[in-house]
Image (cartoon, rainbow, N blue to C red; front, side, top):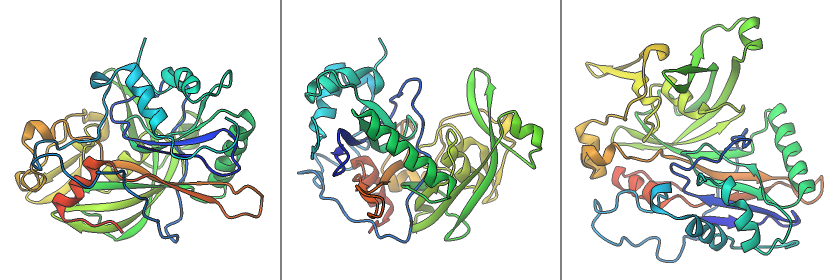
Length: 337
């Protein structure tokens, strides 16, 4: 987990955390945009000892993953507080939102309340942007909204896919809608949406992707959503016949017959645990039961914030990969530079 405070952004903090299984509660929007591929990502220093394995490769396949069932409320506050590595400017159900009051007190913010400015989906690891200053939060939201309208990406995700995209880079465009099916909200693609569809909640979505490395039938991919929609990246990669590793919601839409992949009808395909072939399980050193608990390999790695002055370049924030993510890359022989 990594927390960074952007210079001249009073009261603003960025948390980079493995949020596997955490629900952020009502009123928190997912990340809307992504950063430019033209800017080379800088390496951040790994936490002390993070490069060392504490045991055999297959003993702790999901090291670094926090889940509600194995951490207390007090421990979560301690983890968040300990994640602050730089601080400038003025000082029921277990969710990120529910512990913000304790975190505010723990950071010495007094009566000022922390609010979530930017966060990704509940199963996604990476950066979480918090602010204790309403003016700063408003400025950031305007920056993100303006960037989205201008089709200017401000975040980059790292992802591992089960399968390799047909092209090394490109864009994914799809009209998506939310449907409540069997008690679950699912994202469903809509072909050739009408004006009525758009008025009724169908949204035209857009993401950019670039393959960074590939091997063992998998790929390390950078993803940049240019629109905001629930589970957009998971749905987009399923449409590319390359579901994200650990996607136990939408990977079932991709079927294989005689080595050829094809899409099943989204409306009639129910979510199920992702099924990986035996060769991939061996490369990952996982048993089928462990694979059923595989976390989603989607990490909000890079986030851009506005500079202190209008003409200043954006401030770039990076979150190191979780240890289980790095382990997967090692097992698959994928290298991220």
